Image (cartoon, rainbow, N blue to C red; front, side, top):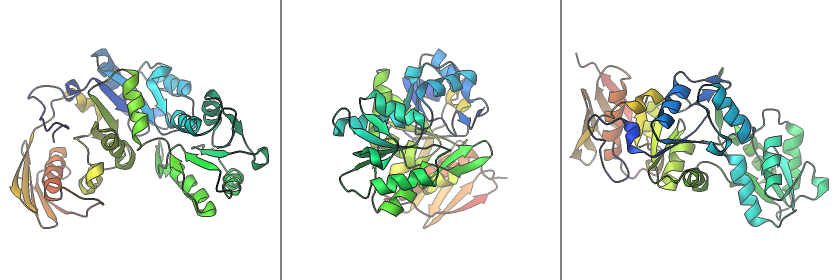
Length: 344
């Protein structure tokens, strides 16, 4: 896999050396619920100590940036509040651009979202009776039917602006994968017949804000979701690192449409300090082949044959390179049939 300029990593150079900033997702990358993902905080502190800036870009609008920074710090990666860019901040900025100061905004979400709306000069309210001219919706694990209904009632007026912090369908937790803000937004959309503006990932501004804060010219987005982190990197014109510690698997990356294909595929964040293996691709049309170290992948029609130990990461890297070369302009997700062959 190559970077945006088509370059391969230098042999022996740790992958992290290619970037001047990492724009990291949180859920599924740094932690799952309250607990750290094994080795993630220590690795990110090592990244920062090596001179590469670390910023955290999160679609979780339920907590203020200060609480997020405190959480990351408690896990072993000292973090300042300025290193956290949230979708709540992005939503507040979007509303401030479109509304006059002092406008009332219905908050369908957490107190943290209300605080960000208040910080940009707007007035958070909780009832349609208070005359809101906009609805700001973000994730809150305590959100209930009454709050969703209030948003739907308010949005019956087509002049009311609707902004969602994000539309993530799922969110990783320590016990597994749980419904995310996208499911709650979908409930309001079904009731109101409307679709919101989306402020956070995968839109580009939240990533550009993170990069601008540290003056990065070679940033990389690090995430576990193809439809938010990796798509967002494409939208922002940045490289992307997909890490397999959260929502989307290597198989999902293989099948992804072109706009959700990562620049690099890692098992864990620790691999940032390892050289990224070169992947050689050859062939033409839908008969492509690729080599990644000892792993080999060949495409014939809709079948990808991988010669490597089953689920080997280099095998997936080779498979992705070959399949993506055979399907270079995929506007929707593809459906390759993957066969694994033991190299022995």
